Image 1 (tube, each protein chain N blue to C red):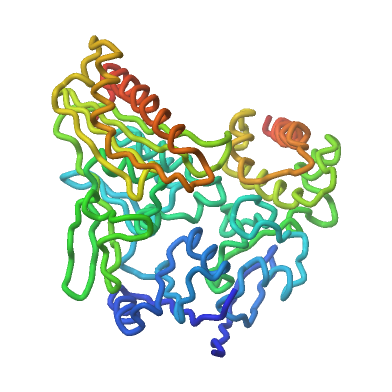
Image 2 (image 1 turned 90 degrees about the vertical axis):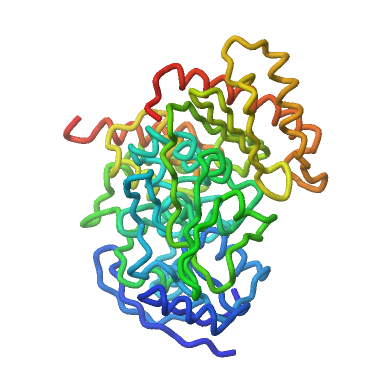
Length: 289
Length: 160
């Protein structure tokens, strides 16, 4: 690994000052499970690494509030997957967090880092999209609340400014009941990056929200307001035709080693159909949120 | 550029250590090269194989994906810290009894992962053992013996 300087600020403003001062030559470090790989292989060569883990204002906690739950920027996947409130009210996020890497990775990797890394294959992204999460960012101009759908741009690129940091992720509690699920396709069992990763939420008012990743430069959210997908008695063929329309923006790379575009598109439709079925079952089963 | 060196204090296998290290050195490098604890293996260096698994503050992590400076103030357990008073711990004994080590390269990581699993879940099911060890590859493919050893070690605990 190439040498770099290491800073471990104790406060958010100190971290922001470092990021402002060093600009493109600084890189923030949270869990490090993506960053350290790229520091080692030389794809990034910062002069300064700013470790965010001792910043007093950045929490590793999951909290309830009036509108939903907040997940602090230092919260790791292990804690998200195990949290009873997330498992009950936002199960697709708990399921997604539980398949990120293996135990060793989940003990270090943060949700905020997963989002900022902006991998098209990020497993937590579809769940955050279907739940309408918001990224709370803090910078020189103060606090900014960015809907997650406006956060992702393309692989490795977000709308977060260089001198901003994610402080919290917010998940609003849905107004009515809903059933939701995360599903994915990998090359093999055990830990692997997703060839297709997808989340679905069906709400009691008939709206279905589907988000999918690893089939294009960024994860995509689509919404079915016709009620067709959410209808337990609608014929499967009709749902597949609706899904074909909804999933039209999928554009998997032909250069990926993990799976061919044809395979990904075929699996995307199949996983979407399965996820809709499971979400409907969970809604009927009386999932709380 | 000459990067500054940092002094870090950590507890490794019960012993307080104070080490001067450069920020770009990983915990894995410090354990092996500065502290001579070569039980922790260097292998894939991308967090996929688990050969470098150690416990940091009771949680299993890949030591190749953690800078040593990040471990400042932490309590670290490596495979060398599992045996007490020269006696193998029950997990190590079970690995021996089940022939779980073939070439042996992955075994330190397997033992640390299994130890972390049992510390959090003393009675894992087979599926939970498989999941708990999913981040530890064995290229000899000795998975059956390894899983058997972990289940046996769990079953033999005195509070069974």
